[in-house]
Length: 151
Image (cartoon, rainbow, N blue to C red; front, side):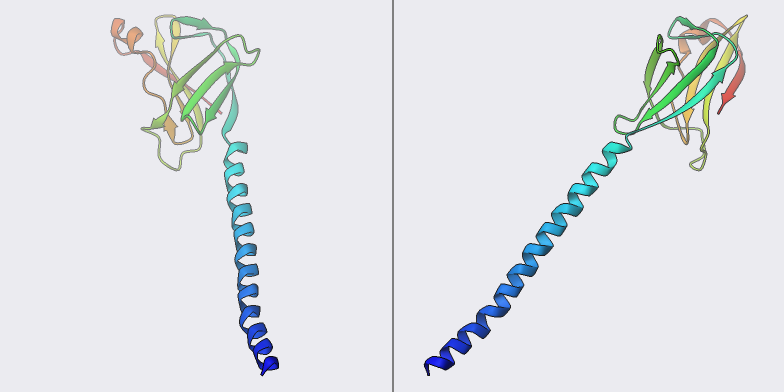
């Protein structure tokens, strides 16, 4: 009778131990998957592209010289930054859905020609675009010509 109890006891606890081990193993694996998933977006927060602008232009009332510019999109804050390659000038704006098609993958700077000078109208990064950036300048002039610089 004593032997029977031992056998019953062993057979009843053995599946429980296996089940506990399986649960513990699943818990550890699930934690690792969640950790890996949370680390992945931090490595791909920003995308950058380089554009060449062949003329000087105005941004927020300041004149930027002709040259190479970096356009960087920050996915977390939904913003875009235009930066000169020597990092002396930079400006950031919010970016959201607008005119571009959802499948559009271009990076574009749109300019308005006002007299002999140019003003940055908007910045497109893939299918997202900034709001109009030169509203104050456009109020003074009528029907400016538009120019585009693409990647």
